[in-house]
Length: 280
Image 1 (cartoon, rainbow, N blue to C red):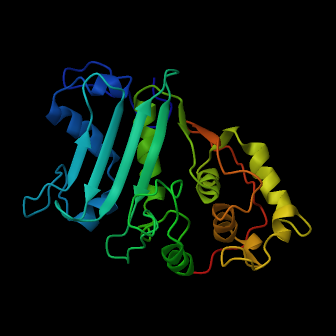
Image 2 (cartoon, rainbow, N blue to C red):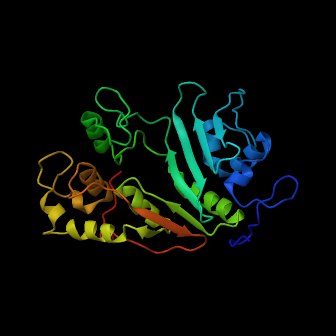
Image 3 (cartoon, rainbow, N blue to C red):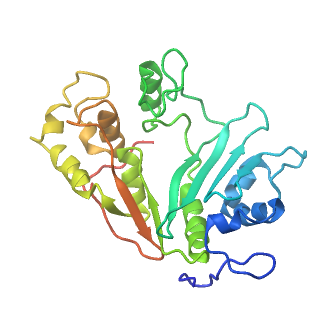
């Protein structure tokens, strides 16, 4: 049963209720695409030139790929600026959990018109898997100075605020009451707080981070100018803290933070209440 106002149970073409991604993935391709297309924000369609109810632009070029294998409880949606060699503008990966929850595994939204920062590869050009296998310090410096967060290769399109309600309604329409995720960085966690998420695991870590970036704290004292990512004053912004954490300022790597959002409920969590707004 759907919980959100003006929302209803998701049905297939035969009028049968759908309650999971795995159930959707049993349908034929046109119906799967019709259902999953509801997760594409209208602004994204405008940026890519996609007419309503189409995954191709006006020239007939297919820009959106939906991978939803029959028998598997997951979907991957990728929208590119061009069919070949274009920028991945929107990348979404969702999966069912064994507890009938929606897992938001990945959501990446990029502005295809913005400059590219090669922080996703090491200095030899090899994929670094979110900097877990080497870093590209020159590109990270360029990205940081341009106002990006760690692991961002482009500026965003400011679309998450319009995408998330679509995801919440979609999850609700499947009869699920919770969305779960694992933020890949400190700034991701803070951003999810804004959208009403609470912590399954990691809230004490987030509170500790805020405490230790206060005057006299461990991390505050390590903002000593020993690297461009550890400059005095970075404790005041989400970006500054996130780059310092990315640079290894903590006593252990950022890991094992899990969050959740109950459908229709904003948790009201704010683990960095004193932050300054980022300079644009």
